[in-house]
Length: 124
Image 1 (cartoon, rainbow, N blue to C red):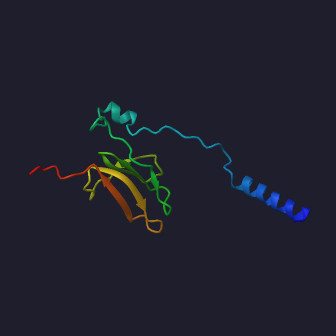
Image 2: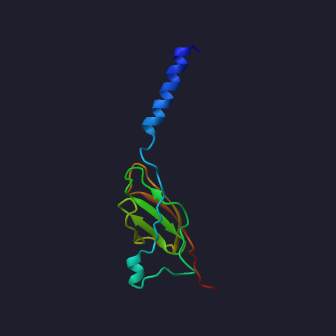
Image 3: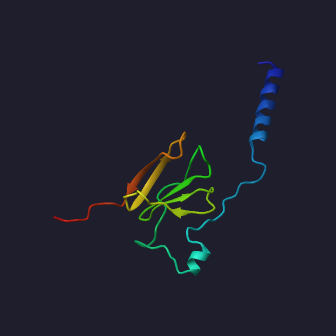
């Protein structure tokens, strides 16, 4: 490989890295499920020692503002504003908990969910 081709490849790689790198350092910010306003109103999470996320937050490829969060015994939470606000979204969800989701990359109205912590507890 000639020196000019090697130089062109190195320059292209460098430029692609610089152009595609975020301009600011990306940092995680703590985002509690219980807001200070909810705590002040006397609303506290409960159930079996707490309600815990069961999987990662799922982000719609088609609409990055649409997020889903599965909770062990609390069903699922939905955000329509990229995680700034979360709401319980269990209408039509029959399981007590949720283990994970997949959002159709072409249509965010189609979601596949995996329920959890559910069982017919009647004994015979």
